[in-house]
Image (cartoon, rainbow over all chains, first blue to last red; front, side, top):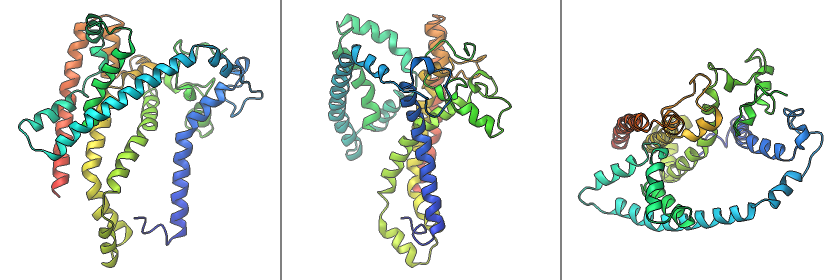
Length: 158
Length: 182
């Protein structure tokens, strides 16, 4: 690969220029997020469009630590790690079956997996809310893990 | 200050806001717009906001899948092409593109389906406005169901969206099958 790049310095320069351009495009919104997080509240609007505010503050981050941030973060870690682990095990099995074996209805099942991606998840929020209430998993992390696992398996096993 | 420019919902699209974001001022400096206004507030330009955000969000997914496909191309093919005197452009069009083709078709299909169902982005950025100019079917379904509480209408629209996306997926899968055969 990159056969032409090594011989022609102009092509190499163009390649790095393109990469630098993309990196700037990709990282700039994140930079702006950090900048706004470090801008004192009084300057958010008056100096909103400056690349870096005239004064910076860590107050916003201190406020984050005073909130229930750690508990929220622990919930995120529990839900995401368990979902990822369970999804990986099940989807790996599914993906293996799809790529290695021939069986009746294989195309149908594959199409069904794709079908689950095709309508807004929002539409099944109401039924899920009822189902979760009836099996007593409403307001629990377990319920969240079950739902996320179910939603993620189709896209991971294909 | 600037109250009229700031919608009453939290936004992730601060960059496009003329009060706290730089993009309108850059466009103004480039001469693309007459004054640094909020492009999300103008029905003619608002759609560019979600487009830009989806591009920003989608590039890494394409990069990862295409990288996986690229690294599965045997290096011997390029060596053989070079020995046969193929130019870089020829080995790109005759080796790289045919190998990537099926993967590109699948990636475009999946990403387009995901974007059609990405109501959250539209809702957060523009709420479908101004004047419905950025409304997509899934955000329309969301507002119909949960704002106007018309679940029947929303479900019917969701079924139509499902059928449309199934047709789209069938077309792209057919394209992929053709690309694999060649």
